[in-house]
Image (cartoon, rainbow, N blue to C red; front, side, top):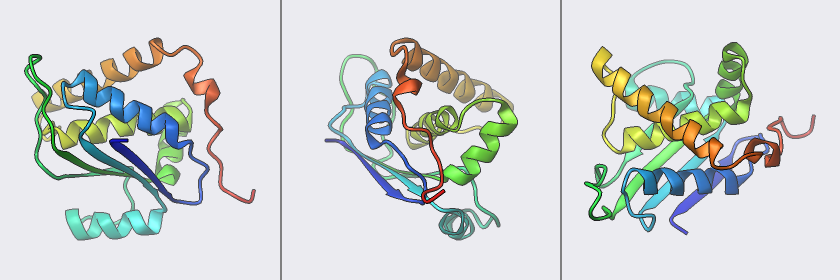
Length: 164
């Protein structure tokens, strides 16, 4: 499989959901589903270390992307192949954001997975025009993905801290 999902967090995560989502986003963006993509879930301390090391910013963040081959969306005639990269997600931060936004943690993590994939494909949101484009694409991708899979969120085991 082209998408590996590693859970290094204390949260119960259903790998299939994120693997399927990653493959679907690659297909929609005309990136070969044979590309390598890794999605990693980690704890706030580990995320804070990455955030400080790579962005020189303190505190944990929700998602970070580490592109490998700097692939870009295909032109619709051929699928681009290679190593897409790694996405690192922090479920604890996502849970807080989801509560503030009024939706579920799984919806937030799915949105962040798409967001991370778009960063791997060269999208950014450092200015208003880029933000409008990127956020529009991620919203459309998430809504289209969920519309094609009625009940998908119901199939997911709710995220919760292990042992509670």
